[in-house]
Amino acid sequence: MKFARFFVDGTVHTGVVSGEVVREIEGDVFGDWDYTGSVFRCDDVAFAAPLVPRHVIGIGANYVASSEQRPAELPDIPVFFFKPSSSVIGPEADIVIPAGVREVKFESELAVVIGKQAKCVSEEDVWAHIFGYTVANDVTAPQFFHPDGHWTVGKSFDTFTPLGPVIETELDPLSVSVKARVNGVEKQNSPTELMIISISKMISYLSHVMTLQPGDVILTGSPVGAELVGPGTVIECEVDGIGTLRNMFVAAKAPAVSVS
Ligand code: MG
Image (cartoon, rainbow, N blue to C red; front, side, top):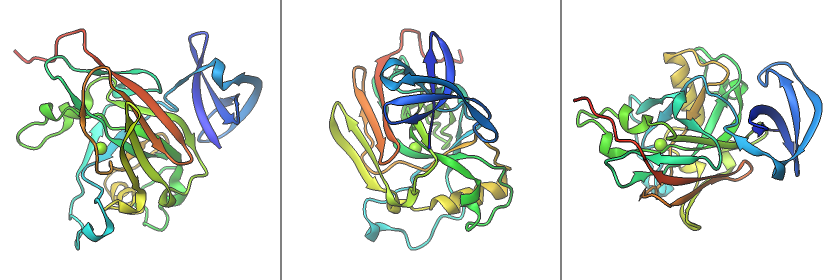
């Protein structure tokens, strides 16, 4: 099933996309829900981010260019980071490049949506805790990475986490490719089998650190090919079976952050 959120007359509704239409639902997408009977043509509505995440957790440097480059040993501590839920936007919303920098990086990623509480879950049991998958763009301003290695500021600006267009609950995440196109030109296209730390490993690891809850979103890393881009760039992130997440980069109108 493809779950989505969409705007009708300025208010956000939840629904299930089937073919050319979206059927409105009410209730808890992670629990009990029902169809309301209202049906909208997809072409007639604007899609929002498919959920308001509880947490957004990313993993860094998680793809190799080819299977021969796979490291012999996995890192002891994966490079996890948080992104604020305030950075989440939906399809077609503008990604705002902070004033003071000319370009930021796009990172097309497969995003996992947790559906059942996960605490100390084994790799084998991870799958029962996953609700579905969406596409993410882990927008990054490396100019704001702290020299000591902290990524928080560079990952956290408003609009830096586009998600969508839908959450697909029936995807096989091990048999899809993660792609990105910049102004129509392909820049990223890698099968998820080129991940260094697998989905089951990363979620099992995280669940031994923190209790994962429904609505937590885990960005599984970006394939090789991510680049810096400037205002006016149209970015399309795509995962087979989920869809295309399209956004445009624009320049900020307000000044960048300052601590002075
Ligand atoms: Mg990333």
